[in-house]
Every structure is written in C-alpha cells, then in structure tokens.
Image 1 (tube, each protein chain N blue to C red):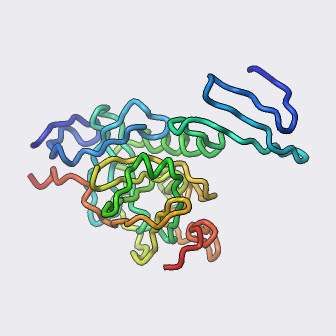
Image 2: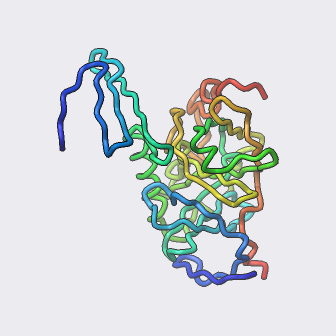
Image 3: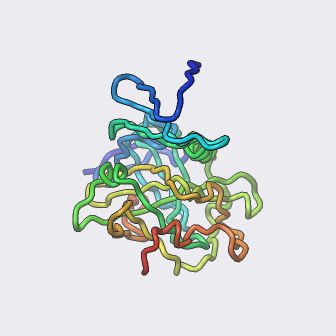
Length: 105
Length: 162
C-alpha cells in the first residue's frame, strides 16, 4: 500500500481523472473531497462491504429455504418511497409485474 | 418471444424474453452477471428470486419492502437516477435482498441498505448503496421493537410529507 502524507487543502490524483482533497482534519476524523467521473462509484468502504457480504450470503442459499414459503404476516400498509437527492419522489409500483409467468405455460 | 434459461435451483425454465431485466453493473460483488429474471414461485409468500440468466447457480432471494414491518423511504443519488433512467411516466419496482441464516424466525433478514431498483419501462435495474444509515440485516419475520430500525424516519426520507 502506498502511504502519503497530506495536509489540509492538499490533494492526491489517481489515474488522471480522480482527485482526492483533504478538506478538514478534526481529531481522528478526516473529511475528504472526491472528484471523480460519474462512471466511478465512490462508497464508504464499510457500506459497500456490508452489502457485498449480504449478497454473498444470499447467493449461497440453496433452494428451498423453508422459511421462504412462509408469509411474514406484516401488514401491507407500509410506505415505500424513493426520492432522488434534491428531486421529486419516483413513482413506485408494488407487486409490479417484473416476474415471469413461466409456471403458467 | 420465449427463451430457455438454465438454473441450478429451478431447473430449465422457459421465460418470455421481455421478462428479462438488465442490471448493467450487476449485483454488488457479482459484476459478471447482468441479465436477470424475477421468479415468483412462492405466492402468496412475498419472496421472489432474482435469477441470473447467464449463471445457472446465481440467484438472490428478494422481496418487495412493502411487506416489511417498517416504512421504507430512501434517497437515490443523481448518478443512480441517471443510471436507472428518469422519464416523466416511468415507474419503478423496489426489491430488497433476503438472507436466511438459520431456521429460527429472526435468522431471516432483509438488506435495506442495498436495494435493487428497477425501471419498469426500460427494464434496467441497479443495486444501489444508500447513503442512509439503514440496517443490512432487518428481521423479516420478528416484529421489530417500537422505535427500532428507523427505516422510515423523516431524516432518512428527506422529509417529504406523504
């Protein structure tokens, strides 16, 4: 691992089109500004790793997981709302016809 | 048009070609598979499977968060919205990934932090990593304690009134 020392206001560049600036240093916390192309996903490492871990567990499940045939019995009165940062909510469809009716053919 | 796909869990399936969803980035950690179909085998149970068309043994149990014991209000980044496409009439489906860790009820959890959003017009989807601090292991069966798991808290919702 390459280790570099930077002060507040200083930056590093990665691969020509990614720039990471040290905005603030406060105690043990460092605030970073990241300039990267839209195509580059930037996440806090732990968030991405936690989602990845859940995906790995989910993908490793054989069929049938007995509980998956059970109905949780939670009331379907819950709100599901998606919003885009600074924008209006998206229209969501619950029970949408995303599935395939292969079993009916 | 119908097409046949091979799956390790469900055998060989004949599906409508227009039922296929495209996730250009794949599922997080599984970038090699970008085409999926949602299988709905367990009605009336809310669980479905997001089955890869390209990899027979890659499938994720998923559910609509409307069946969870919490409100689910999330905020996408502009990048996510652009990847999904955003036209005036577009409608979206939301799924959360379900894992079963043990036979007891609280061993079944849903990942609220990394939902899969699908644009139903374009059938393009994306698993997004949310900025909101939502649990990756929210119990699907056990009723949460009052005040627990604020999946629908106003701060997470961007304070939009219903």
